[in-house]
Image (tube, rainbow, N blue to C red; front, side):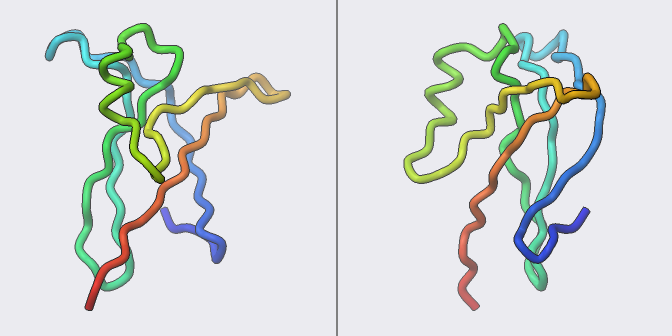
Length: 95
């Protein structure tokens, strides 16, 4: 997907289930970013605030000063569709 001129993006997916192995990792969505003329890189997975597998200790690891969290809350819109948001702050690449 591509962002619009204001950097906004949107995608549709199902809400994933948590892993049953790997210590019960919370449900999450993986995605990568690639800026024009730069290499692709991985972002920390998107977690859901209401997932009981997201522990207080895990939340501490994703608190970033001046950065956006990778934990989102979901809400139902007027059509009953769950919606969440994740803002992303990109690092500036030096040429």
